[in-house]
Image (cartoon, rainbow, N blue to C red; front, side, top):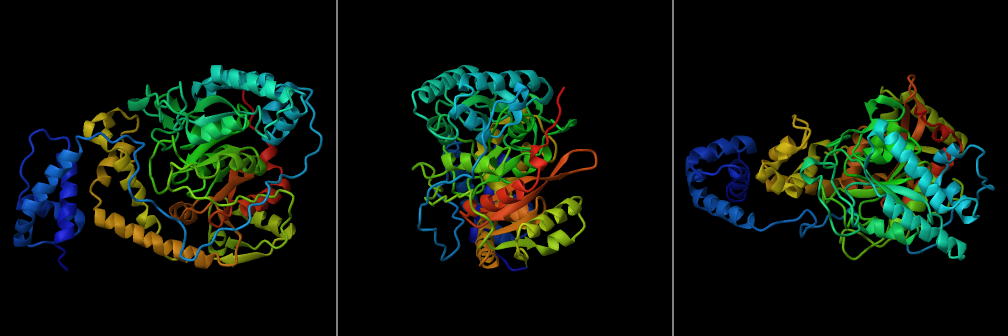
Length: 550
């Protein structure tokens, strides 16, 4: 085996740091220790080479111990920023007006309970035309949250006092003719990894369940400026994984024997059940796509760098993305229009036009599909095939494409490494023992194991990621949007490359639970992506069906 010496020596020291982090009586590093560490790294050094490393490794360990004495808050970002843009990428130059589709006259329903499943756009019309007040609407949704949370376990904190105050302000402004736009007076919820002044921000986790962060996340600020009304901080799987949090498991309103999936568990569950019109979720590796599929909601995962994450819990600095979960595609566009754009604090966020136009048709839009993926056997093949057929009937000429044959699942450990760094203190303090999930699939085990991934391999994986980005750009040349099954290689690959997607219901399982399809866009191509997804959704009625809660 080829021998690698000095760079890897530093990495062995890093790996050893994980062993010693919880040990009070630290012993010197020896040749025998290095021989054992080599097995983890898949390398082979001679005893002479190992002996030559000893002084450097022991010095490096002292450096680790020194810098660990300086606290690093989760909000501190690395001095390295992931850039998803391929070589030669250019943003659209024009900044065009945001346009929504025409809407018929909206009237209050005879049964007020039907308001629970009105879209943001419909509720906005009721507010704009003063058929209902924001205060009435807010109280309506607050009552639904209180009534059904005992079944769904989707709420961490009701923000009732703040909501009533914001609703009263919205009513006064609308009455005075100062209508701010589609979200003015609309209730919503936020995944509890977003900081809100005066309320706990628990990250769904026992060690942080009493944590208060004295700031409003940027997306919370922007929604408040748009006149939206924050009613609840909603559950997330502990530290943004799954649907189990310190208060239990968030459930799927379509089947209360099942979890809602996660990690945007409470957002998808509450929107699906008609407890809120929309919510803000996040995705690192499926956390909008998966619960939206399980609960039958419509979710938008924006391009990495489209929405600032300032004030949000960091799990993976190069993969975290914030996005809306709603009832309809156009609702997602309306919310996205408010929360997107640079803030001067999240340096990964880029300035780019968002030229959504809900009045356009499919003319001139190049739409592709992952041919091999749709032709393989998988659970939702029949419903997905009908989606392709519907798009063809709508006038789409579907172009077959294939994903690049490059590592994607093999480099997903990038997430594990960054998450282990984000929660380094949790591991070293032993407080990871407080987390609810302690099995092999739980964060504590992942954080510990990720400490043994060498820094060189982490950087090599990101170099492969660069090749993946370039290959995706080549694959999508001349393509605006492509269709993919919601799960599989595409989900991991595009979370690594930063591409946006819209996931929406496209049918139901025999037992009645919803299934979904994914529409993928080019980098910063959310406008056309949403436009195509909306046209498909308008031609179906899957999003208009709702679970029945008792």
